[in-house]
Image 1 (cartoon, rainbow, N blue to C red):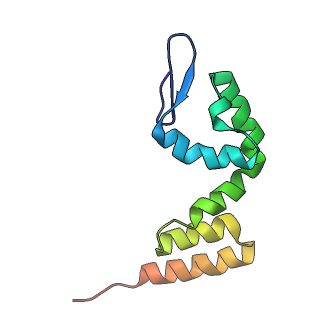
Image 2: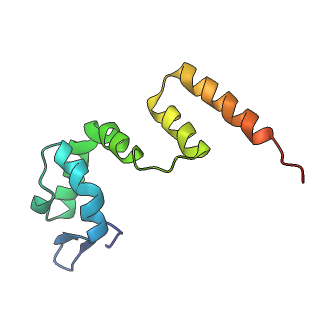
Length: 103
């Protein structure tokens, strides 16, 4: 089985791709997991479970790098804001989307 993040050989040994290392090293590190110790699919699945309580922290770190667009601002509000902030942001977004440029 191969994915963007890891490859598994015929013997069941798991190896992370460059994308996998770049994306998952900081995520696993939040849970105290050294990604280089994850050598099998079962160990990878266990690492994901162990790291899952840190997912939103990791996502917030990544969100700092997201583009500064209306869509991403709305997504950030949906993920990290309050219900009231989301309601206001959604109304603002919808209003802005309703504007049409006349040439």
